[in-house]
Length: 424
Image 1: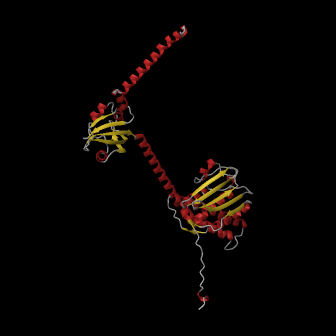
Image 2: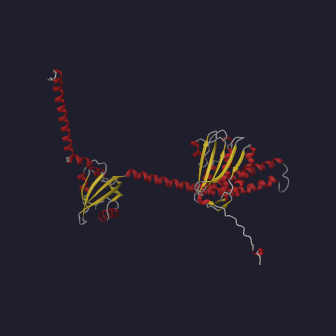
Image 3: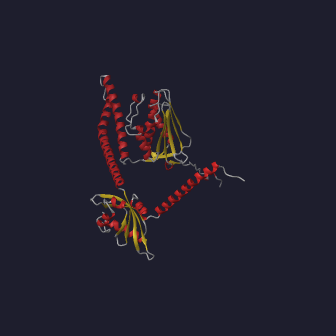
């Protein structure tokens, strides 16, 4: 027969009371938890400190009850103070009484409502913005027993929104004023500038006879070239300001893409040759036409080619490619082996008058309007512009036009009159 040892008896005599005490402790804690769950005071604590306003209003518009959060939101120290000051909805709590009436009529006749904004007056007279949701508890016959509503203080959020809208309105007004000023200024400058360019050309070409001093001819040439550069800048500013003001209409027509590309290449060929650059174009056969403004499209492509040539060192290459997108649109890419652009500098390059500092860019002239104007003209056609670039490796600029600007060429059908050759 097995008999427990003295050590085992001692161990059991110690563990049994401990286990009994732990079980008793767990049972007491569980009992306390149940009592807490069934304690109305516990629920009232949660109700009062819910973080949002909760209220119940009877069918006649009298406040039945509310939580402390609602009273505090309106500047009252206690619920009793609030109910004493605001016995029903007919008081001055709601700034817009008609909207309040419509809210409760909707609850009564239609159903629950969510996220309706009301301006309420606090005890001290300050206004707060609140967001209300509610429903009506009804009898079987449809009569309202009471309304239950929640209200949230959205004053801070509302002030932030109002401030943002005001700032945006001011920014839009400033931008419109700037665009109008630039448009007017550019228009006023072009008239005298055209006269200066014209007179400089007359002197440069010695149209009315020899000037007498070759140095005067050189000066006239400098005046003419500088005037042309300034006129080009003014035209860019005028175009940019018109686009920003929404006053740049497009004179659209169906354009032969190959002819447009060749015209643009001719404009930049001399500069590319001077820098010993390889200038090539890849145009597939049977390309469709594009519906666009001829002047704008030439300006877009010429700007991209000029930029690529400007920032490509001697011996590099500039390639233009055209094709169709998978969705039927038309894209143009201009790719170079130039100095490239850091990714963080691309937004700068696309901003009006943005200038990127580099050893080569400091040697070249530029106003910082080429790319922004190009992007604006592309977007005016419903397209988009994308730049991919790596420093010291080169840049690839892609412009894409939507499919509704693709015009398929009509097949030419030759009809021969065979009636004269038929017998009889």
